[in-house]
Length: 173
Ligand SMILES: [Zn+2]
Image 1 (tube, rainbow, N blue to C red):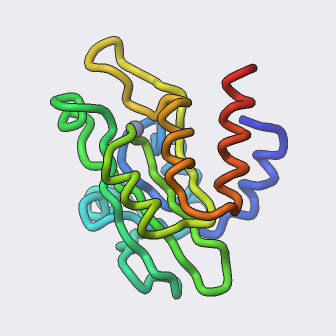
Image 2 (spheres, helix red, strand yellow):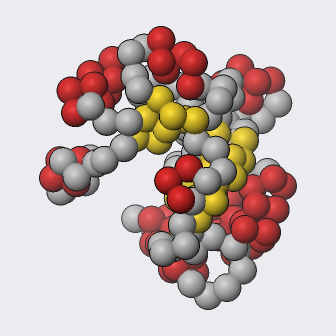
């Protein structure tokens, strides 16, 4: 984790779970949430199972926390692999007093994601990338090229333009 992560984690007031893969939420993560009594926000799909794990879960629907919320189902791979990876929820979160955020969650680039950034015009896009794969069935996360394509499709010259430069820099390192 980057420097400063532990002090940032002390400021957490809630947790958004996009899907239930153990690299996102494992036993240690569940314990960490419970020890702090943090509320969890998740889709209607994931909420029942997360409650069975002992978490306090709210469904992240439109209007939650004073935000316009749109769930944008993600494709965590292509074809059969996407189905095997199970449901994954991306979100566009727009609070009137804050920059809007599109959290893609674990995804590959598809027309739905391109349509979402064009239509919703998020100020910030958070997109896990790195072209991870399982040795079969292709990538399960954005490649750098897909990330650049996504950001280039985003209208405006706001922070998303900066993300293109960041993606290019990462590519060179
Ligand atoms: Zn995942």
